[in-house]
Length: 469
Image (tube, rainbow, N blue to C red; front, side, top):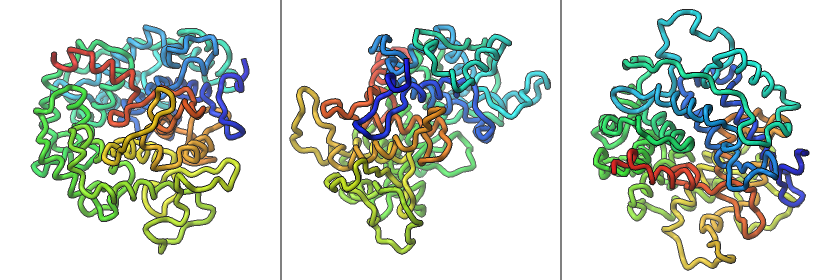
């Protein structure tokens, strides 16, 4: 089985290295290189990026004989590995509600033998020589995508979990953003939520809201509340199907103060708008069924559409107008055989792969405000967000950011890939896919408001223990 037969290509454009991305994310679940040390207390979202990527990628990217109804995650993870990750997530559950991002700081004071002294991070520590041997085999890049991974469960073993921590640790508090990714991980792994302390979680969410309506990452957090932690609170309330822990009017009023004159949203009333906080703010209005309360939606739409730009050949002028000269329209003629254009996070900045998700998801969420009667191709309606940007050029941009040897997707072409940009790029590609026109990479459909696959959202909505039914 060759790489070319497993991966898809759009015409004569760049191929989509799906199998390499699957193995890149699977390797990253077990091992991360030294640059990730600064993110050691954020292992939860790192694990989420890897697992959610695998849940979007099709099993057929590893072997065409795999069941097409399965994801790459279903093929690569054995049941005991799946359970091992679930146990690890619950070890991070705080007695006061919510989840922390990892247990490395909570291990302060343990014996030296329990602390890793090398320059790498294991999301879950390797527990045996057998685990290490399997890991070394996976890290042998030239052979890591061999046919030995074509069947269900042909992967390294998940180590046994460490004893759970019973006490709060001041250096490792529960965090709204980490909690959001923890719930998604449990949904991806199809946990039954029997160990979730739902009442404590609702109290934790309520305790994070400020008087101005914003949410802190955790109570007494020294940083000001902003749309990111506010979004985490909203999406958790949506997942739990319980909004009583949130003062909705106050939270939305705070978000309105974060909107800037160009229509985008910033971290606060006196900051510059950027793509991530714009998405978080729009998603809050959408999750709360308050889209009609969004101020100046036309300005917001114009701001988002204007962020699709071609890569800069030279540094942009700081005196450029509010609409970049390299902005792309969905109606622009294709002067290049395979033109590409991603999204910038702020004006006068080059495109960055992660902003393709923030922008396309934002467009998907606000599209109901501008909907008219949509035509359809066959039985599939045309996602209205596609008419506001050029998905083909964004797809070519994202495919140009792939690493053709190791797999993974970087922030820009030529940079090293990471799990954050890999996941958000796959999510953007899923939102921009169009099976009716042949522009389908086989990725699972995504829910832009929750930022997870449709399958995961449907599973979470069926969990009575999570939903308090």
